[in-house]
Image (cartoon, rainbow, N blue to C red):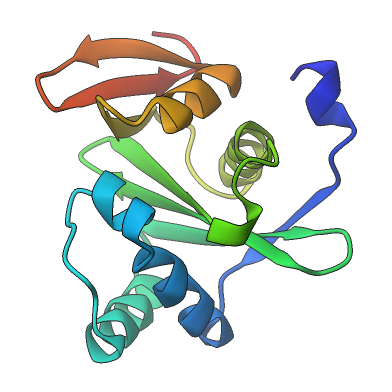
Length: 158
């Protein structure tokens, strides 16, 4: 990673049920919804069911990113399916613009590969989401497929 990212001190830990409210609040943020594949507002009940299932699913790996002071700054989600892993990231709205994203992505992939699989990791990013595109490229992803609505990026060797 570049020198500007080496100075960031980010801690990653597994998501717990106690993170539910933060993840739901971030997920229902208007900008998050605009850039998500499903853009409807998620109810607390729907979210709690999803999180409970996701935490028990061996094909999922959910991490909370925090500052060294313990402030939650983002959530990263890996989902293994059909021999590949899809990754998504949601930065807390109040933490956006602080250049955490690429560092979180890079650190989370290292943690994921240490603890889980070494299969292709992809990110599906809406074409008009320039901020996410820039973050994933900076973290080492490469564009592998340009679509009408989404671009597909892959980590590592293409």
